[in-house]
Image 1 (cartoon, rainbow, N blue to C red):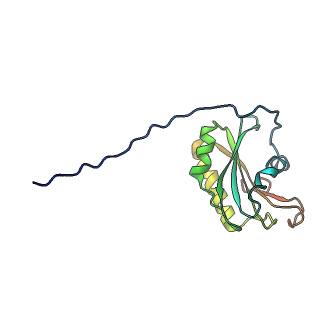
Image 2 (cartoon, one colour):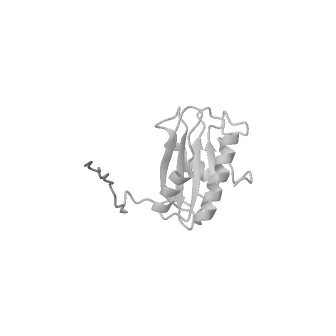
Image 3 (cartoon, rainbow, N blue to C red):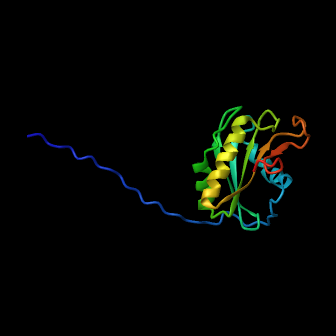
Length: 158
């Protein structure tokens, strides 16, 4: 007689807990310039790597949280919609702004940046979480337009 081995499966229960990290005055991030200013310190820890961030917004475009969702290499980072929208859902965001940096300083979008933005926009529409903008941060000196950032919203791609 052979004994059948019963495979055990672990089942986890997820829970959600909100805790206040800090209280501060915020301005609405209702323009690419304000988003660029709001995100300046985010890239200081890993300046030579692309990182993707999601800024979660209230109904009135006030930032309620920001989180890094991907840390990549010198020239790429993964912009994965499930990671982005997990943060947005947990924060109860009305809308989001996706922000990433180009360590080269030139914020011009690549073909991959354009494709990823379209995917995030489509996923957000399905979940009723609007993608307000996707901003690529660089520096004004390396930017052919001298702004230091590229806004997909300003360019009509968002």
